[in-house]
Image (cartoon, rainbow, N blue to C red; front, side, top):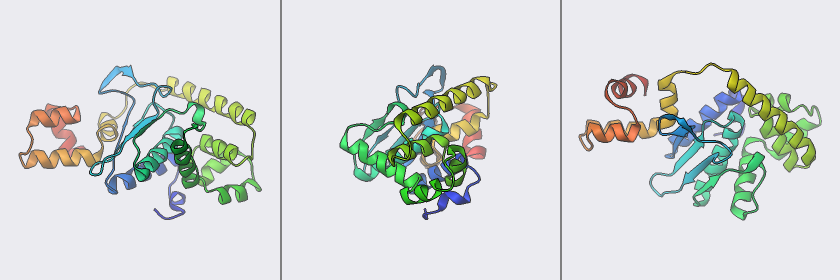
Length: 234
């Protein structure tokens, strides 16, 4: 990714998608899920786990909690990517996106913050406007990331950050609760399974290295749903 890669994205949701694709193309499996398996009655609360990373020399693995705000997901995925670079597996559940006291966690936070919103660029923009939402559109991140970055750079105080953070999260929860249930199953499955991992499963199945039962177990899909996903939606 070049330095100003996010400027080519219409919004930060699309920036998250492009970032995810780039990470997968680098050989790291990325999955998004907000429930245990496919069980919608067993949600994974962001307060318990925003994400985690399993560092492996062959298949590094990133998990991001899809129930979390897209804002937090953007920060989580870069934070966990830094863990891959450093070679340390870890979970990420920082309350209100505040830094941990652990040296590695602090470093990963710093990497994520600088990657998403470079310090010099934000300081320059801050002199023109201090509106979190306006700056979020400019940097293609969420207002929360801007707020967190402004706090890191001492542009705002902790009380100011908490006031903004709490209002933002409350609005996010209200919007989420007001949305109708449902959605595109296959679009959700692509993020939950990971296109890269699903491609490996399909290749192994085509070469008869695994059985259909193995493939069903690995993807959480079976029968016609599995065939449709692999042949038309992958």
